[in-house]
Length: 81
Image (cartoon, helix red, strand yellow):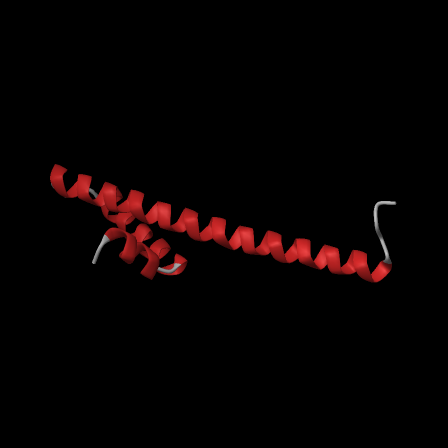
């Protein structure tokens, strides 16, 4: 699976849980330098997935709140006159 496809398939919770496991394994030590680097790179990818998912959720929340404010202003006739 391509990285972009895999990234799109991962939900926030899945990426977060895998990231927690990556961090746990890195903190535990005992892995070779090559394995540690691969874990670090995977952790970076997972952190990006989490960040993008959170940014998307924030954008949807902001849009919803803005629409709610507009609807309330229209109901009360609250324009900037």
